[in-house]
Image (tube, rainbow, N blue to C red; front, top):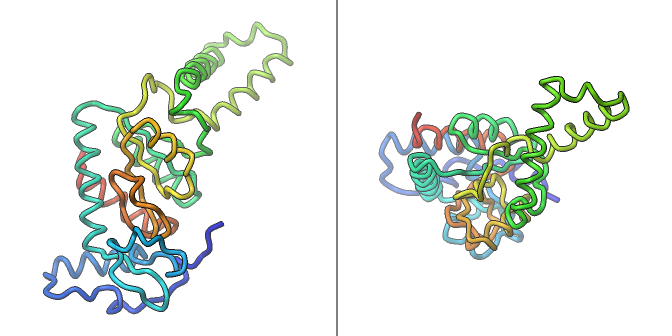
Amino acid sequence: MKTAETTNAVVPEQEIVTTPALSPEQAALYREMIAAGIAIGRKKSRTNPKMDGFILNYARGVAMFDLIQTVACIDKAAAFLKQLIEEKRTVIVLGSQPTARDLVLEFATKHGFFHVTNRWLGGILTNFNTISKRIIYFTKLKADKAAGELMKYTKKEQLDFDRLIKNMTVSFAGLEGLAALPAAVFVVDAAAHEIAVREARRLKIPLIAVINSDNDPDAIAYPIPANDNTRSSLLWIFKRLDEKIGA
């Protein structure tokens, strides 16, 4: 279980931004990121050694991300997503944490991506043939209800259908129309969604992911090293992605 260490650490700005010769624009950008809490990672004892390349230093025992690299990683991920949009290829955006759900929904809706904001149902990728049939059935069931086609059933059967629709909504809302495996999966907090990450890796589907300092970046094609469980941090990241992807 995650602790609140990333949100409670108070670190002076000068302990985070120590890079010389920053332009006024860069300095303003990094101050903005610091204020959003993006720079603060996990405690040193929990930090994955493979993340060392993304860490500027440790302040009071807490990993501080190199914000220059974080910005570069966000922009690289945005360029990849923009390319997929231009090629009309599919992307699933996943974020089930309360701090991320509405941000994921808004971002995915704006850019025409599929999304999962509740629990990831195991097999969405690795058992796609079966899952896709369930998605089609879910879509039809909703359409039948909206058209009044379920009224011909008994009240008990209608209640059963309503319960089924409710349960399937938890698993498949945001995936309707997904006819093939996605070209990429964008995960907010890779550690919290290890099943989805494992499935994508198994099928060699490129992963974009916001990862904290306790993650393994080798599993991610487009890692975004940052505080992954603070809303202000995620909000800033999505805003930057939006700006770089464009309308």
